[in-house]
Image 1 (tube, rainbow, N blue to C red):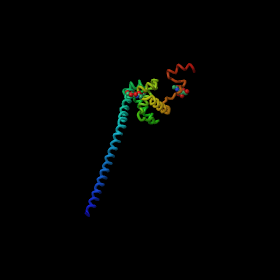
Image 2: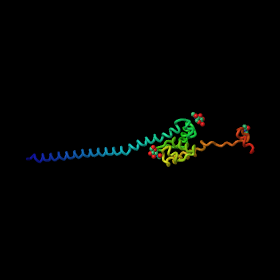
Image 3: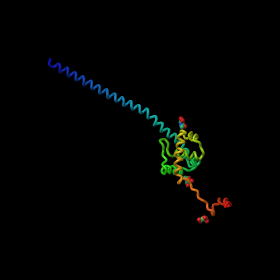
Image 4: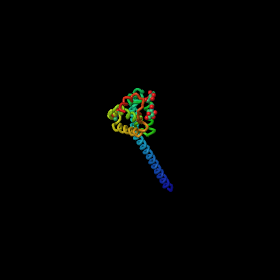
Length: 179
Ligand SMILES: *[C@@H]1O[C@H](CO)[C@@H](O)[C@H](O)[C@H]1NC(C)=O
Ligand SMILES: *[C@@H]1O[C@H](CO)[C@@H](O)[C@H](O)[C@H]1NC(C)=O
Ligand SMILES: *[C@@H]1O[C@H](CO)[C@@H](O)[C@H](O)[C@H]1NC(C)=O
């Protein structure tokens, strides 16, 4: 008879221990479930965006490649300079005046747009269609490049040299009468 309360006590403790174990395991499972939900959620929200960004990026650069990088001939026709000069210009604009790549447009595409517009008097709407960009993006990058080019005028713009009266340039003879 003296042992009974001890057995009951032991039994109770065992049951409490069991309950605590079960509860802890349920918590663990619940937290795994939450982590899994979070992972699934982030997969759903991030994967499509990253994938379409990459696809977009290459699709949009396709026109730039055809316009400039395909051959010197096309490059001269479309942006009025050969590829060597085009690279040099991009490099100058980047290093001297810090024209920067934006989040989804590299420097060369901005410069191509700018040169294409001023070479052929194109409207932003035409460029927008060809480059598959919004009109706002076209306008913004045009003005970006324009600002940088204007600030580089000392380097880029050819300075006018005054012609002296004794110039031997054959074209000058047509003006000599005015002397
Ligand atoms: C590119 O153009 C520059 C200046 O017009 C010229 O000096 C250069 O030889 C050309 N390069 C090629 C590869 O045609
Ligand atoms: C770019 O092209 C895609 C499909 O070719 C089209 O859905 C999208 O509207 C175009 N974007 C612009 C700004 O023209
Ligand atoms: C032309 O005249 C200028 C001075 O007006 C002189 O410095 C220059 O040497 C002359 N050039 C030639 C080719 O005679």
